[in-house]
Amino acid sequence: MSPRQLLIELERVAQRGTCLKRKVAAFVVLDGSLAITATNDTPPGMARCLDGGCSRCAAADVPHRTAYDLCICVHAEESAIAQAACSGRALRGAILITNYQPCVTCAKLIISTAFSGVWYIEPWVMPKHALGIPGVADDYERLWRLLPNGCRRLSGLG
Image (cartoon, rainbow, N blue to C red; front, side, top):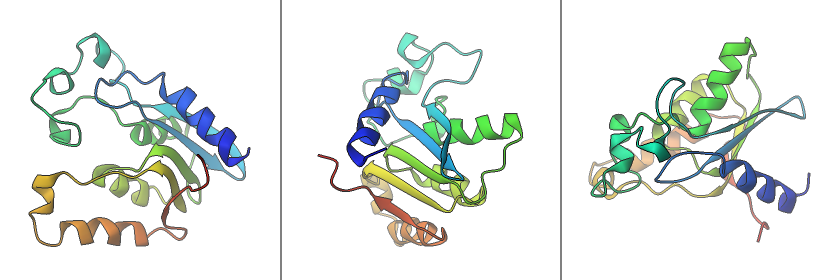
């Protein structure tokens, strides 16, 4: 798949996401093949975010990139890893491709799951309140250096 086709497919799949704040898709490439596609959504049995399932996302005064710990939505990266776990599929050495760079929580999960690398299109921006904590941005960068192939932005997709 060409980089341009990848962008088109990521954006197409992301539109299936149900989060009010941002639509994200994640692809897992394992042994050279697309193994898993996922989007951000609420857990099974919960009302979809678009239908009022997540109070945090529905709150107008809670900006994007904040209060993740209060959000019931499952990030696309988390969903992809959960799909693999439910089917008994190991992800060691896989590449995660997403239209939005993973947050700190997802980064920890990706590293703990032994992915070899992450490719993303749009960078994640750390929330302003977090930037006031000395070293937190450096910690985020150090996390990505733990992956053999790192976390890198896809270029030439415009």
